[in-house]
Length: 201
Length: 113
Image 1 (cartoon, rainbow over the protein chains, first blue to last red):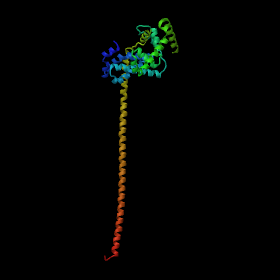
Image 2 (image 1 turned 180 degrees about the horizontal axis):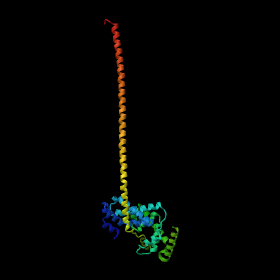
Image 3 (image 1 turned 30 degrees about the horizontal axis):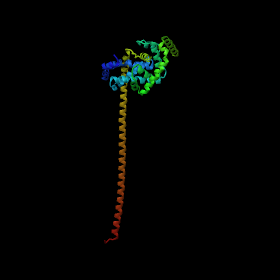
Image 4 (image 1 turned 90 degrees about the horizontal axis):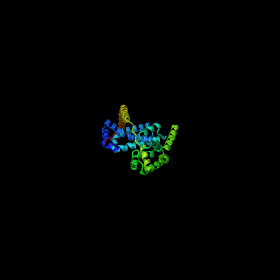
């Protein structure tokens, strides 16, 4: 069941709006994956992501009366989460990377594809500046089109397209053509990258 | 190649669930916040009562001061009026005496008149 189907069949928003505690809990359960994942991809740190996701839901609880529909709720959650993450990244400009344990935990959830390449991609996305990172995460995690991304981030569509184009070019360049083909080269690159991060921590 | 890259990126950024306990922690946090706000509410009302009482006292003092000033002004006006009446009385008395003296002197100079 995808997000839209869930929205269509779930009455947790109306129950939460009526002041029902169980309704709000169901609302959190329904959207926790979206909020937490956005926070995690933006901050590259599980603890910070969980703190931010909790803050977003606390803010939602206070602003619940202003939510008009399920679609508005999803839009609101994405907007607030990404903006809070960008603010936090601007306040604490240290570049975080996913630790080895965190990377392994996240990689274990990948059902197919190349886990090593995916991990490298997550590291590279985590190293992008905040605004382009938000654009890439909303495009490839949330599957939003540039118009929706522009609305969520209050940016022009041209800026969104420009961020996407430059970020993808940068990611492709850093992953490298050989890495996309040869798993051994990729593994060596990953180990050297992990060693470098380990030595800086 | 481009589609493969996009697919790998999609898989790399696949959403992750924070776990079963997450919603419970959020709800507990909301309950804590609500309890804290309930505890801080009496203090807020105390401040409101104190402010209301101070406003009433201040209003009373201002009204009392205005009334006292008005009474003082009334007394001053009354004194001025009495003073003016006294002066007018004295002037009238003086004029009466002058007229009376002149009448008496005219009568004594012309006894046959």
